[in-house]
Amino acid sequence: MIVIGVDVPKQSVTAVAVDEAGRMLGERTVPVGSEELIGWASALDLERLWAIEDCRLLTPWLERQLLGVGEDLVRVSPKLTVPERRAGRTRGKSDPIDALAVARAALREPDLPRPQPGEHVHREIKLLVDHRDDLVDERRRTQQRLRWHLHELDPTFVVPLRRLDRASHLERVARWLARREQDVQVRIARELVGRCRSLTRAIDELNTELEQRAAAVAPALLELPGCGAITAAKLLAEIGPISRFKSDAQLARHSGVAPLEASSGKSPTTPTRPRRQPATQRRALPDRNHPIAIPPRRTRLPRTQTNRRQKQTRSHPLPQTTPRPHRLQHTQSEPRLDIGATLAHGSIFVSDGW
Image (cartoon, rainbow, N blue to C red):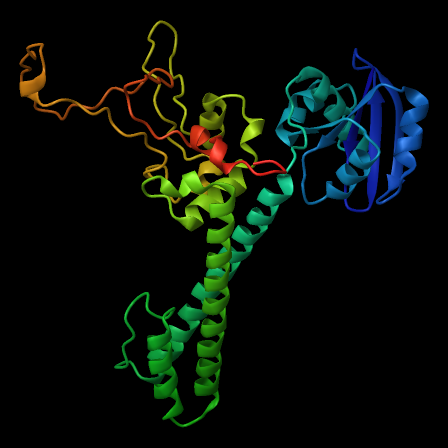
């Protein structure tokens, strides 16, 4: 069996084949869109594995081409190729060096992600979420420019904060501008009002579509406290098919909410939540203290209903902190928010995936 590492720039595709020991067997560079790689790989070995650097903007056409002819492929994260580049004997940076590092990283890592059925559903949600975020940013910039124009025209004309996305306030601003002399600045301000209206309509339509798609893909996710349609859509877009995670611990590590070990020498410390908000959670949730990211506390019985007498503790001048769990602890009697279990619930699976 051979492994073929592929590096996909914009204009060309570079493939490097290695054996099971990581020795280089061949190299080939073809233009983008060419089908020569399949014939070249067939002459090397009948049993082969394609390892493609995971860059979804550049590799979809190649994945469709390989899967269409029944080839087996895995996706290699760019960060996994860093040790292979450092250990390589060839210095510098080139497409063959990158392809060789991808192939050797695929040999080193046995459990690399593969294309999942039904990925297009989450890909479409991801595209809609990104497009909505772009429109929200553009509307915010337009509103800021409009506010400065209104302040320059008349400082006494007040528009409440966070109200320029409502039709009533935009109509009030439009009527006020229509009564003024139509100079250049007033015309620009009226154009910005129209732009705010169109952007708000487009954002509302995207919100409705995202809510429908989230309810169709993961209706149980919308039942979680603090999880609305937009948050659910962002979680689906970032997590993708839940089947690619073997356990809830993997999902917690991917989301950045798993406890991290922090010890040095003979002074072990209790694992705590990560101090920095990971990129995955930063894209999906507003902050690391979002209600979905924090599991609920264990419910305790009233003191009168407990059989064991509770020990009285002395008061301490400093506030006492709640101990953090050493690992993800799940019990039958402890309620918790488990996004992985929610997404993997049987009611959210569809015919072509989940």
